[in-house]
Length: 362
Image 1 (cartoon, rainbow, N blue to C red):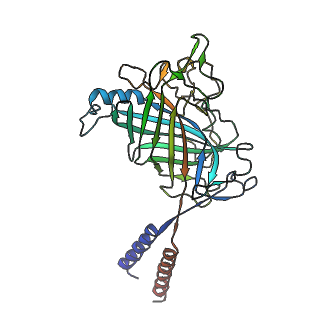
Image 2 (image 1 turned 90 degrees about the vertical axis):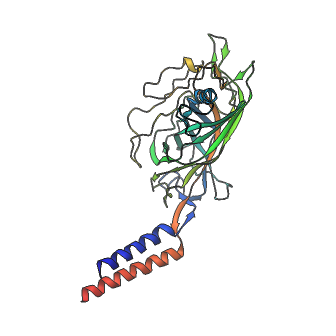
Image 3 (image 1 turned 180 degrees about the vertical axis):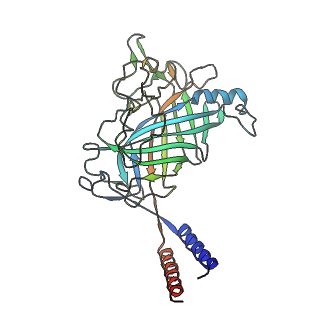
């Protein structure tokens, strides 16, 4: 068999393998052993209510207003002054099928073990109209999504326990998406930021609480690619673009979960399938007081800097960040070859084998 013909056949096999794929549900083993929870075919993760931090988000809105959208460059080619970083975390509350219907929770979930996630990505302000700000991700930018399986220890108010245990998924490239946040009431008297149960942000010294504007927001699906997964949990793997944040909703003040006082700053150095070791950002050290009174995180956790009133979105407010409650799902897909593709691939491999045997006989 000539070199040229070998290259042509190899190229044909490569084309077959890369083009004929179909999206398939994911076979997921929630505890990684099949002992507590049997593998289940799922379509998405349903994450519990949680917090997100827009680090520099308030400053970015002010920069957009102040520069008329130039953001340190020109309107046609904006600079980076209107960019900010979003951090979030959550624990898995349930699973769904490919049609979005709830499935029975895996045995032992949130009692014997929990599945948690941490994520970060860059966004930019794209428009401000009154008290409505629009945002967009930076397609292809580096961010991260990590999913862990471990002991039940996550704490919403402390922002801890979402980035420990065994790392079972990592994605590091963020796709194209957009959203908006609308402030619906930014006048005094403001509501307490924490409207969930007991107020965890009341300051006895100031005899008032961390306050917040009222608002609501949403975001389109945010694709995350460049995935690596632990196939002990994701039994048939995931495609390179197989997970997205979806059905994202946002709101202020917090009503069904405590606002977090700490967020994970960066992707870990932990290998897929390994248990995270060493110093882990965010600890159980919340005090009943404003964000400004929380202790600095020795391991590098990010503390929100919102000022006494969260989310004012005005140029004169020098506090750069804002936080909000969020809720989202993560659709999951595995790519498998189509049946016709498998047949073509088998035929091509058979042809290659036949040609090799003919050459040995000559």
